[in-house]
Amino acid sequence: MTPMTSNKPYLLRALYDWIIDNGYTPYLLVSVAHGGIDAPEGFAQEGKMVFNLSPKACRGLHIENEKIIFTARFAGEAAQVCLVPAIVLAIYAKENGKGMEFPEEFGPFEAPAKSHYKAKGRPKLALVASIHEPNE
Image (tube, rainbow, N blue to C red; front, side, top):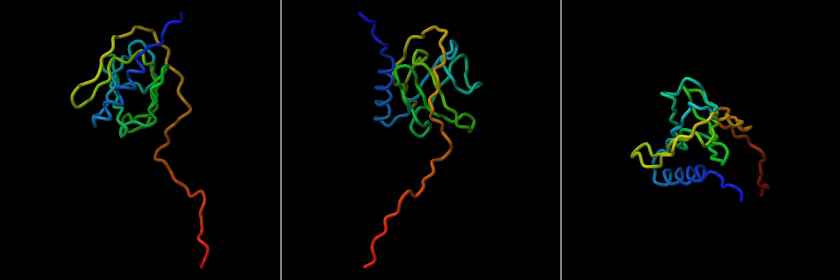
């Protein structure tokens, strides 16, 4: 019998949706002490980082079974964050602290490969086709 995959990514997706659906701000607490993250340096405190995952604060959020990817701003600069779910310590609502804590897993963990998605400032729209009404 093959071992089951971790339930953490499934719980993270469900709790993220629950927090957003209730109008709160989802925060993700991760441990950076054992690797498993590719993010700008200098923002960790006591071996931990907190990320605001609200749709207004981050772009391109994908909570996959092997990695979590999103783009956030650090000191005004957009940067892509990629981390393994194993380093997540908690997901909770900023406003009331409701959510779920997870036991710390000890690595070392390899940082997952970043996706091809790169944030490049504001989206730009272009006219692709124009439909003209016939003159009557």
